Length: 448
Image 1 (cartoon, rainbow, N blue to C red):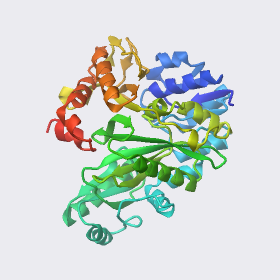
Image 2 (cartoon, one colour):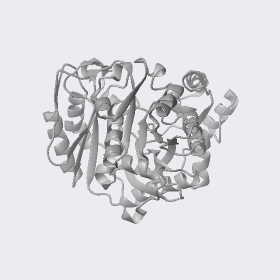
Image 3 (tube, rainbow, N blue to C red):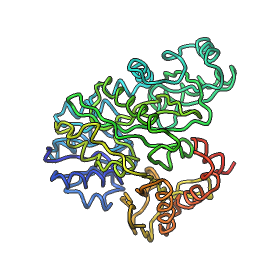
């Protein structure tokens, strides 16, 4: 096991990794921006290194400054968390070239899976269902129109290097497709430095379901079952849960086993998530693989009892997986609600500021992962999430009741949060009557 790990991230995930390190007897060092110097998680770390000003482009995204921090504290390994540099293969390569273990997959696996077009080809090779569309990148309007004619409108134009909902456009006819290709390619060029796009059939009323996998460096791969992440606002997840509603055990098993096959085909190691779009008939199609830990990983932890951050550390340090697929048990129902600093009455506008008071819910089956506390100042420079409220219960009905009770107990003063929106959604008749798809929140709960 490592002696000292540098955590190249901030906030909730930095605190989560600090705790896992300490429980394994590993020294935890965090990097921080000038805006985060006084954060509680920074004080809980064994040491901290300031890597620049508040803006992430000048601190958390500065590869050379992160590497210099690792050298300064004599770290053995670097944990990237999620976001920032977590899926940057150049960063992973530089970590290892400088003698620091990158706690994540190999550079080759990241590169293959980070390019969505290459990942689609790999999925097809190992029998993972993919959405009908172009065989590769589309280079001309004529080629795009031919693909659309073959699969039928509506279609999605998607950036091969995209992420976070960027570089995606829907087209319902030839004119819209021509415009969508130009817009998606330009957005992708600016955001990712890669204008390549491909085309997929648009699945109406689709759901977003993902499978958690864990793999070691010796070819052993297991899945830890699935999470339904369909409750989204502007393509950003708000609620995640397991098991996926409406799925038969056989369908869940097929989806998760296909994720494990893909990970094995890619030579993947460490924790990763394979994402799927699901249609009205519960047919699932591969979207992409996220080569990192996910925000919503605690949902899987609560349902399986497996600490994914500790698993990441153990696998990266050279240990073999200490359990097999048959050992993975999925127990009951687990759910996560993201608590964001935002004004739900102002179309969910970010609401930075000082938390004057915060009363966190508790009780049987309740967990709250957060770096925030009374007196903490939510910065305008970073993601607005201040915590993740989780519940675990024997059934969906019990879990939903616990979650609603916990949301009612949750109290924050000084800033506005997403709690009122979550309460409205989970108590609504619409939520009771439907299995939500990715357009559910916009359709029923957002101002037009």
